[in-house]
Image (tube, rainbow, N blue to C red):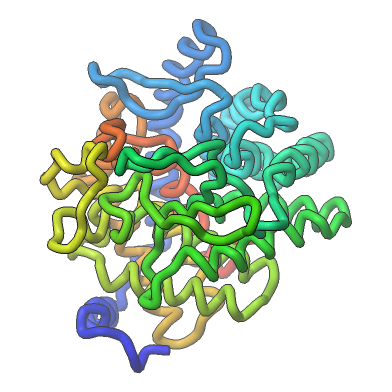
Length: 421
């Protein structure tokens, strides 16, 4: 697999090889304890907000530096309880368990929600972890119901789960009514779970079909990714490849690449299909070739480069600051730790070491917030969507979630355990 890697990737590999020393065994434990301290403080503020605004879940910081929340019907409410579940599993702090149950169970109305494709983020990050760490059978039923709701958005003509109900091009001339975004790969894990626990193979069929369609249409020959692929629902043909949150249609949005790496690694875990492993490693190798020295990527790998032009209505036209996206680093670190367990030799070592170096960066003063700052979030310097002019250089709840998940996975690997029991 390595004979065709570029000089840039070989340089990264050499750097990793030159410093084989991984952090001490207490690295994950210490940083998870710090995360518990930060989220315990955030919980107190979140409880006030939740009481004042029914269904308000932590999302980011506001302009004054306080906690900004979102409703349960946005795509992010599952991350906060999911983080609490990982921290509970680490420390066995019963008060965290109580809070995790409370914040999870408030999402129950979503089990039949069909308004968009993000049920996996919303329900599997919350109820999935709740079931994993408690075995509560009621949670399993809710997850199966959520998978049924998500499956209603699958169209056999396109072979895809519809993401948004409509996508308006940044070029200002077109709208598309069957957009599929690369993020959608993350929602498939709940479908695989539902198939296993219910015996209904329909869920698995939907997940595999969507992954194969994505594999066919979302990637360039070098394994860089498009963000949005739009289909004609009558014919199933691709009618456009554009971006929503990236710099340009032909650029590679780093968080989109992160979603893809994570999603195809998970699909290989669930299916054993070598096509998914080949895709995951190709995507990962592209990502590694474009990393800066601190392992936290630019928000888009091609931002402000020659040959890449945002749509006329995109705010990216006005941004020249080379913002980093720590959320992409956290997502990819978690994915690479798992991918390292499915590969061998130099590939496995490189994926693991890159993940650990990213975690070291995210745990440094450059990216990890001090107590009493950052609206209680752990990770600093994330980007939501520059084209939409929202959440630029701020904390994001999903950055914290995947940072905590990655630490949890690393701690298990260092203890000689599998990532999943």
